[in-house]
Amino acid sequence: MTARVVYVTGCGRSGTSALAGVLRQFGLHVPQPEVEADASNPRGFSEPRWVVDFHEALLRSADVQASDPRPIAWHLVDRAGAEAEALSQIQTWLTAQIGAHGNLVIKDPRLLWFLELWQEAAATAGAAASSITMLRSPTEAVDSNAAYYKGRGLVDRVAGWINLMLGAELATRATPRAFVRYRDLVNGWDGPVFGAATALGIPMIDPHDADAFERVNALIGPTPHRADVSWNDVPVPAPLRGLADDTWAALDALPEHDDAGTRAEFDRLRALYPYIHRKLAASPARRIAQLVPPEVVPAAVRQSLGGMLRRSPESPRRGSHLAT
Image 1 (cartoon, one colour):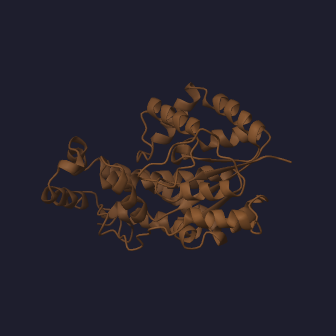
Image 2 (spheres, rainbow, N blue to C red):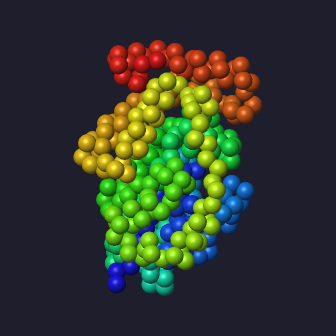
Image 3 (tube, rainbow, N blue to C red):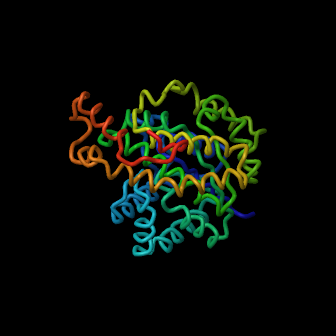
């Protein structure tokens, strides 16, 4: 029987750990050793340590952050991967894991930067690869991320979410894929998980496996979910907020409407994002913010800088989300 490799993708704090944990309860193996649980994720990450270390080293060599907002970051990562002969290393490791354990689930928030390499490695190993991408709104994902990981401003976090999720949609087109909303997973995991498994043809995720069903119920349990997070909690300039809203609307449609029209909308958003990024990066407030850690800037100054960002000298066409 052909081995299955399921890549769990999505931005940080979007439920990727929970989904990978669900899949392992149905028999997909998480390669060991794995990243240990901590206060930010007490139920565990379900991340293979080798994968995380490998991705972190490649990102460092490319001078790219895990949720880098720069459009050029994708090119920098591709170049670093080629220079490090990353594909060969992934193929060697993945082939050994498939040979030893068969069906695998591979999860790491950094995986999106290198997904094409992982897809090619699975094909070379003779495995059937697919991806399941977790979807969480930008306000919820950024708010949760900021609560656990300090040091970056909200503009960078929201822009990084956009850049990563637009890239995720494109990268996952190459193999069978499914999408699961975070709110659907935590409010009733069985429907979206079994739906994704059926769509992707993953037979070991069996709704009749009562033991696995009970284990997953214990794993998911009551999950805190701040459904009331809004842009008031994540204040960013209007152009960025508008693009994030449009990106989320397109992502939110994917579980039911992964079709040509939705993909065309993503192509439009990817073409627009570099312009928005340049607009923000060129503002005086942005240059000031790059020099000062956000946690030491007084609230009154942050509000003033936010106003400067919103009063960009550029005048976009009426009716677009670039309007301030």
